Image (cartoon, rainbow, N blue to C red; front, side, top):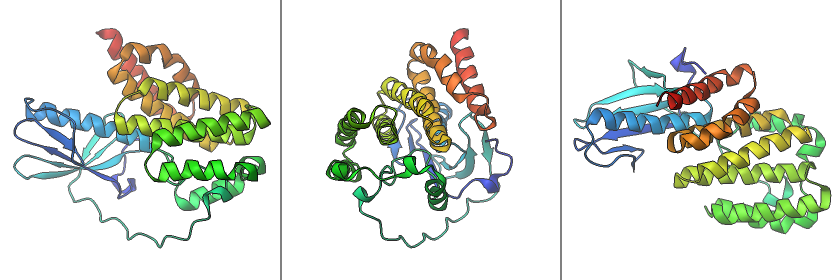
Amino acid sequence: MTITDPDTVPATPVYTITVSSTGVAAVNGERVTEPGLDTTEARVRALAEVRIKAAFHGRPVRVLAKEADGTAWPLIVDADGDVVTLDRPHPMPPAPAPVPAQAPPAAHGSPPAGSSFVPLAPEEARRAMATAPPEWAAPLPPQYASAWAELVAHERAGRLAEAIAAAAQLETALADAFGPLAPPTVNMMTTRSTFTARRAVEEMEDWAPAVELLVETAQRRREAGAPEDETQRVISNMHAAWARLALEDPEGARETAETVLALLGDRPQNKRRVEAVFRLLERGAAK
């Protein structure tokens, strides 16, 4: 997405960057640099962290950059490094809508709430479920209800490692019962890859395994004929994780670049992501 109209960028989230006089930068209170940098370099590194967050959202995000002297600058930052300085404050976020009662987790087969890095808006999600082929929107068979409830409990309690392990066990059981390309199996693999990517983000490590699993998930979904909208969200998360891998392990990222580019394809919405991959590759080749 090109930042052509700042008003089209949603009001939330807003990431706050702070830079101290000692060169310590933080994003939403989480330190991203150590003391000793000049403030310009610290700010650049903080913006790099926000770019990763923008990539996971699949769109530009709002930023409030605070200087050591208390000056604050409202910005919009895109995943490819575009930065727009606003001449007015960020808008107030809308009041939260009433939260409807949730169905029991085992009553449906979709991933737990909050499990996707590129989530649909609530109304969009309902439309996606309504238009998905019945076999892809169907709940899990009742014999897996308790295993699904356990997985959901782990995820909602923030125990992602346990949630990933539970998803892997459930995926294996579904593959044995229905085959690796059956909708319940592929849906569970999608859940597992989402949790794995979330854990990589939270711990800021293990990017290579996350990329590998997201690639395998996107390929499996394509082979199984799964709904393409969810496949594109997997691919978006794959690109964001690959971008982080490229920063930390350029050689490892180059080994998977061809597969990443193949999955991004020539879709218009992926054009900027493809260009970003080529830029990172060219930057690595120039070193």
